[in-house]
Length: 72
Image 1 (cartoon, helix red, strand yellow):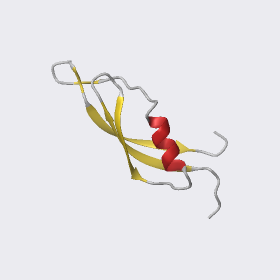
Image 2: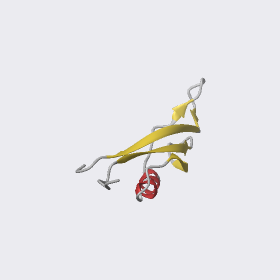
Image 3: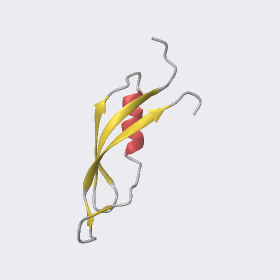
Image 4: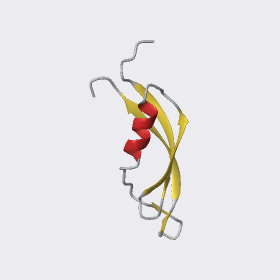
């Protein structure tokens, strides 16, 4: 397989009530070092907090597809 620096890594990301990343787990690998790069980058992300039914910020988890494209 030709290594062109492209692929998608699916991550499960735990986010606290302040929007900070607290947990990152790879759930679909791309290989070739892309998994490690996606995890490292995800730790730098900041999200808007999720809001509970009463409007207060709550911790949550999301699945996030980190896409690597050649030349990007």
